[in-house]
Image (tube, rainbow, N blue to C red; front, side):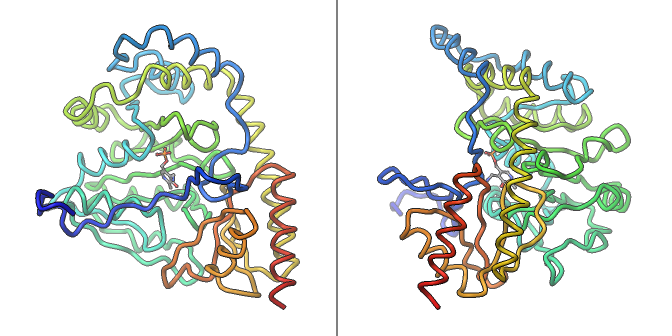
Length: 354
Ligand code: PMP
């Protein structure tokens, strides 16, 4: 740290992104990316923007917001677009939380939540998941600050039903509920269905997972016009050109070919069920996932040892070294051949350890 680094941030522990190794060809099952490339229209749309890069992007994101609004049955004024859903979450935390309105989130959830809270100096309270890693909605009743729930949750993969989400909304009429639906397309129910009845609900989505565009950085929020207007005020106060021309065009093209992505999601869900079954047959504990990853624990060794052994054999998964998660590894679902290699590698490791 330099002597010039602001004391505001002296105690900040930055987020640790999943490894993106540049040196060796790993089987990458560590950051929940899609194994499938974007649909063909995306490449063409991006190429068409290359000759226009001398021009700023549209700060209003007009075309993409219109397309998203049509897709989700809302108005463009109900949509805010960001540089990945990480940016959307950061702005939403800033917009709605504060001294009088703390943030609430689970103890085992997306690791960026406490980092955004700390960076923005927002008070937060961590609410433990139940022993089986599920959420008890009642733990969130009477929390009139800003509750953020990843649904399905990461890294557990567990999903909460809409009845539970609605119960939390009803119990906190003066609080904002942010539902982070990064993984919703792989089999969970979207809270977007509740938007016309609750003005305190913000649904956050990403193109990074189900729509194969992690590298393009595109996320968005859907909410009532007043919440979106607040987010737009902050976005215009930070970076009105937050989403570049190529990404805006890629997003629109992807929406026009949505069947391709939804087919991919079904394929990934089928592979996930197959791999979960194989691991269970080998004695693993596997949480029931509604996402494009599995959170699972080997009977043969702890999560860190399994992560390291897999890495040694060229397979990257994620391990979270915290008391409640240390037995587990998080495995992104790749295509059929990749997952066959993963399962075979695990078998090899367990045999060597026996
Ligand atoms: N929410 C959750 C729960 C995530 O796991 C991730 C990706 N790591 C994000 C949000 C952020 O995704 P992105 O910024 O790529 O849209």
